[in-house]
Image (cartoon, rainbow, N blue to C red; front, side):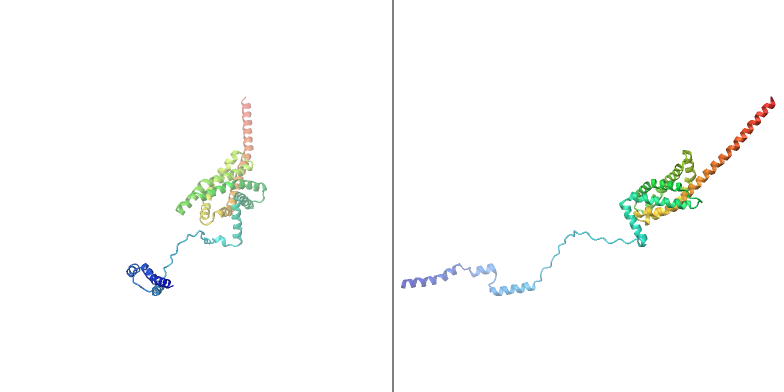
Length: 293
């Protein structure tokens, strides 16, 4: 028993020495971790330093916006503030976008009908055949006229607005006006039953006067239309002006018809007199021959 007690006592005395052998030396701790400090004091100082240090500023990373910006509404034009007229113009523009050819055909028929009624109001009697001729002429020319003005809208657009406008007016007056006026008066004569010589004579009488007078109106109308009127409303605006213009053309056509009728009547009146004079001359010559015999 005594030996067992001595063994336990020696073992207890040897353990601290074994633990001390594995502890790092003070010089090693100083070299690795700096001065010896108590663990609690070091933690408090670190916390105070963290409190004194301001937090780092947050850097905002730009994120691309995938949603397109909503465009601001365009300012309303003057013709968009006219109440019922604005609603009618909007309905016309929607019809123009959905069915441009049908809309142009109906617009042209309405223009030519009103113009013919206005022109015939100057005469004493109403001629329905003349109205039918005007409607046929308007129906045939509606789509080509629409194509022509759309061609002018999409072409000859330069950096200078003044140059673009002047070019469009010059091209329209040089090519479209003579061709359309010749078509109008020629078709009037053709649908009236005139021959080729009658058609040429009608064009020769009426077209030069109409071209000269168109220079007084249509350049200003074209300039105003391409400057202030939206493309979908230009045909309607030109149609309103064209009612008065077609009235004038119908008046010129009526004047040409009257001039042709007067010429034909004069020729018919001159033929019987000439025949009588020829017969009288022949009789006098026969009588002279008989007297000579």
